[in-house]
Image 1 (cartoon, rainbow, N blue to C red):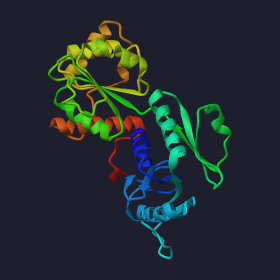
Image 2 (image 1 turned 60 degrees about the horizontal axis):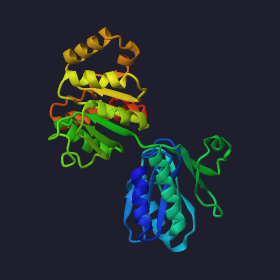
Image 3 (image 1 turned 180 degrees about the vertical axis):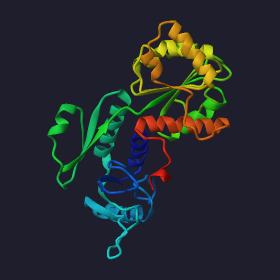
Image 4 (image 1 turned 30 degrees about the vertical axis):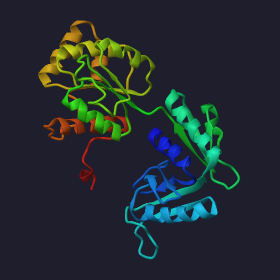
Length: 320
């Protein structure tokens, strides 16, 4: 979401855009409510509402809206029913809201959204579905429940951050993939020749410092995921002793079964809570048969997404 609005800000400085937002869905569809794309006057786009013929239909309507400025809904019919003009056979329908964003008013709204996303605040962007009202940001969550269904209310939550402990080969690929998947990335390693911005251009912060340097990150970073891909179990122990004092959505630790058991036994002997140890994903990642550093990074990121989105990790083909 943060990356999308940053791109939208840049586009608005060049001219008007049409923002397309999935407002309602029914049945099987490729994207969720709130999914977005924008279409610029030069025909360029960013984001996606699902691709295919449905997105092409929205694109054509958006080009017309750039001329007329008339807000509108566009229905994407993916039912595949023969007697209808459908755009696919997924099985459901999507309702997409198109609205022109332009000028300083829209640019200021985007700046406000970015401020909320980067400051750790919690709010919502409210999009009224009529021609008289314009979108706005709501910073009082208690008021959200009182709003009516004639508008779309989207939570503005801090983007997830992945703290990667260890800057070896797996960390390099993991930082790249996690960034693509929507995570802000921080890397820590006390080896000065490993923890460099050149090795991790995707990272917002690279800490070439002792493990104790992550203390401040733990204290100030909301929605923090942690992946331990360290060079040894001694580093794992040092990190986990720090993490045991914090409630985090995800802690993953790389290593063989023997290494994991050694770390757990040491921490148990030190009086570490069994509840904390049960929260650790170790060995880290999903079992996809990964062997290379790049494949292991994919396995780890798949598990991050699974935890973030509440997935099962099962193959979709098993549901047919």
